[in-house]
Structures are given as structure tokens and as C-alpha cells.
Length: 429
Ligand SMILES: *Cc1c(COP(=O)(O)O)cnc(C)c1O
Image (cartoon, rainbow, N blue to C red; front, side, top):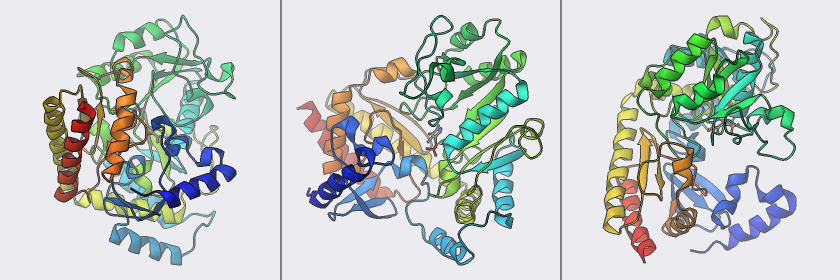
């Protein structure tokens, strides 16, 4: 596979952009490779500047669900463009998008649009602190919620050790009030809460998507919900990935949970930069201009992005079979790949839910950060490179989920499974 043009572009990019990329994972650094440059994308495929074609399981890290360049969506965007690109004033489409989201998520009564998932989680936490008048926040080890200072921590076990910043430039005081507990371990949450009356909120992905896909154990989310209610702690669901991916009303619909605030992003912008946070009216009414929790954005509610989002959400609402179809495709891949792994005696565990899945090179179950971390990174690196050579693009990091779209058809699924067989055979040596 020739990647000469990509190599040249990457060399130039590195002279102009830190690491050559506008988001670190795109550098392929964690798999010790160099990125390809996309020329165009259509359906389930990415085409690079050297004329190579890849079946895409990154799907803009989950933002794409219909497939690339879906025709109706492109038409809608063209129409939207004719009406101007940004107003800094109200327009009817923001109401329509809000209405679609409120209808899909029973827990959301009021919502505010942002430009990214990071803005959504950052604002949701400001709101939780503003509403409760409390300081501390609880997150789960290994979880990613965007790059706001106070969320860039993973370390510290419980109250005994303070959280440590995960990034230079994040002050210890920024993460001092962030407490880290363990996903799927309600006792770890109880331990960090104890008699602490200063916890404003718990933030989590109900189905983890940022250390690979990790499903909540039976009862974990319910227990967390009850605990939060009992202690007056707000429950924030970060459904930036799972919202509209695992079900029309997100993971909270599947598990029957009623979070206080929900964060959305990715899919709701149809491939444009959009995020949202919303929840109970009583809480959301504290956002400015109604209340004193400040939150704003010059391009928030951008008409192009919003109309793209509306198109995608309407599509998903009208064609509910999309979710059954995504689920079926993920099940087929998971089952076939498990068989292939067994055949070549490669330790491999697949977790998945509806339109998302991930494989870990590990023996046994993966249901928390510790078990996910055991996944063999060098094996993933080989797997990634070999798959790419076969024209299949998985995330350039062992801890990112893989995503399917409506446009992944039988042909693409079959090719993927065949590629798995060849690659696992080679990995087995
Ligand atoms: C992607 C992501 C974010 C951040 O969204 P951006 O649009 O990249 O800022 C937040 N939370 C979760 C769970 C995500 O996957």
C-alpha cells in the first residue's frame, strides 16, 4: 500500500501544526505509525490522497452514523448554506433540534446547544456546582469527558490520595475537587462519598466508550442513581457517544435511568461541531440569561450544524430499524471474530452494544479500567497496521471504540471478517 502523498503531507503538517494534527489521536503515534490523509469519504469508506480505500470503523469517532456523505444530508446542508452560515441571532431550526432531543430523552426538559462535547461537559459541571452550591465532582478512572481542566485527571485512589493532573498546565487545584472512583464498583463510589456533603455531581458515560466499550454491570447504574438521589448529588450522564448511537434516547433509555443532566455531542451535529447539555427544568433554569450560571457561544446553534443535526435525528426517528440493524451487524462481527480468535488461539474479548464495539487483546472479561488496561498494546499495534494494509481502518489507539454506520453493508462486514481471519492468522504466527 503506497502512502507517499500522505507521508509528504504529514511532513509538511508537522512543520505547521503541533504533531501535525488538530487532535492527538489522529497522529497514529500510539500505534507507532503515520496517518493517512483523507481525500474524501463516502458511505462506509474513506479514500486517501494516494488512492487507497478503507472501510471506516472510526466514523469520526462515532459522530457519523448514517455513513459518509449521505445524499439527503448533503442536500439539506446545501439548502442551509444558501441561507447563510452564521447569524449570531435566533433562528427556527434551533427550536426544532431542541424539540427532537427533548422528545428522544425523557430526562431532558430544557437544553442548551454548544459547539463540542467538551463544552457540554464543562458547562454541565459548572451548572451542577452552581445549582447545588457544592464543590466536588466524581468521575471514573480512565473515563474521558473532553479536555476541561477539572476533568483531566484519572489518578488518586479514593480520598486518601489526591487526584493528579493528567496534563501539564492543569493545576493541582483544578483537579483537587475531582474525586476518582471505579466504574462498575458502587462500593468505590460509596467509599469516596462517605459523609462528604460537598459533592455536587457524578459524571459518567453510562456505557464507557473511551477505554474501549465497557458495559455497566447489572444494577450498577440503578445503584448509582439511587445513591445520588439519597445524597442530593446530581447524576450527569455523558452520552456524547452513546446518545442516538445505542438507542434513540441513548443508554439511559436502555437501562431505564433518569439522570439530572445529560451531555450530548458527536451524532447530533451530523458531522458538524455540535454539543448539547440538558436536563431537569428546575436545574437548567439556572443557566444564563435565566439564572446566574454563565454559559455562551458565538457559534452555538450554528444554522448549518443544527440543520445537519435535525436531518440525522429525523432519519433515526423515522427509521427505528436502524438500531436493530446496527445491533445485528455488531453481533455478527463480534461472534465471527470470537470464533476466529479461538481458531488461532489469540486471547481476545469483544464488548459491544448496538452501533459500537471494541476488541481487547486480553483473556477474560473486560468491565473496568484495570481489565481494559491489560489489553496487549503491542498486539493491538500489529493488528491495527495489518488491518490498515487490508484496507480496514480501526481507531489508531487500543482504547477507542469502533463504530458502525447505516452504510456498512453485508459486503463490508464480510470483507472485515475475512480480513480479521487473515490478520489473526498472521498475529498467531
Ligand atoms: C468525544 C467525547 C467528548 C468530547 O467531545 P468533543 O466534541 O471532542 O469536545 C466528551 N465525552 C465523551 C464521552 C466523548 O466521547
